[in-house]
Amino acid sequence: MPDLEYAFLADAAEVQPGSKFHVLGGGVTRLAGPAFPFVHPHLAVVVGLRLTSVERNREHELGFIVTAPDGAEVASATGRVVSHGSGDANDVVLTIAIDLWNLTLKAAGEHAVRITIDGSERKRLPLIVTGAREMSAPEPQPKYLT
Image (cartoon, rainbow, N blue to C red):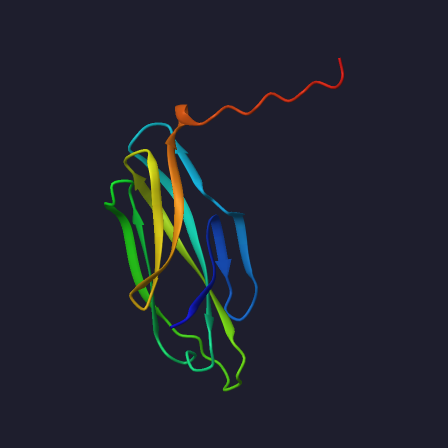
């Protein structure tokens, strides 16, 4: 079974096969909305699968489930991925970006994005959701010039 080399949430991501990937606002762990429920317009799940030479050229099922604090499913999807490559013995990392559009969040608390590979949960990314009033104000900066 492929290993997870990395997995994180971002504001946006673009992956080009066999090349670099581009991330905007990587490392998302918190979201806030004006009131519940609210719709978050876009979030990207970025996943890097490490595949051995034996695991290449075979289909693998990649899935995600977004869960609410009470465990209810907010969104989910699965898809099949294949990394085509030569017969050399080196591992390869297949990077995939999954777009989550118009994610409806109904309650505050710790949500999670659960990532599955071939039906087995391999990673859980926490996502703290708050209302706008619950967000802490920035700490005042000291004045050095008076």
